Length: 276
Image 1: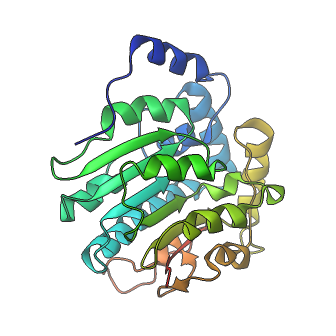
Image 2 (image 1 turned 120 degrees about the vertical axis):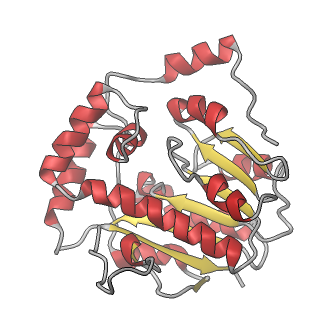
């Protein structure tokens, strides 16, 4: 079952008017780096320029996506989570949250939230569901916590554990917008046994080219980014029980068995934590 009916002509026209094709947008650049087709020439040009400044940036996008898959599989298979609130969905690609979760538990329920009109247009077409489960999509900003929770409660049972997924989205909240408070308010509304899955681009003296890439982005793209140190990213999990191995490079969060070598570190750090 899905709560995403096709957009009416009037809504579709409204979405087209909201899509700015003259300025690069992070969701579309991320889609480009992941090999998707939902992007424009302006996004590809900016993505290539960022990649020149920081050649490994494409690996961050892939590492973040793989982290999502591993985290969701662990939550569903090992911890029995059946409800997900995915804020900052981004453009649909392969192995979206509902696909990973419902592959294991067909009755899983997922609410996606994003405020990008292009994401909304594609979400209505692509974010489907198994007959046993349910998906929904909300066109809303992360800052509007009450609106998100009110809408999520129509699909999710907020008296039962929920996994809150915030991948690469709190980076769009400035320090003066109380990013830690926003995450805390969302988690405070969820019951014990709920989990937080969060990733964030970091700033580190060992990765100066990342800072240059972000500086370029903030001069040319939208929305603007706020980098944080690994220690600051860990602060989003305050009051929660971090699962092993803690807040680490997304590539190093419970990687799949390979040749025994530790995966290369990327400047996208993430973690998973449980609310007691």
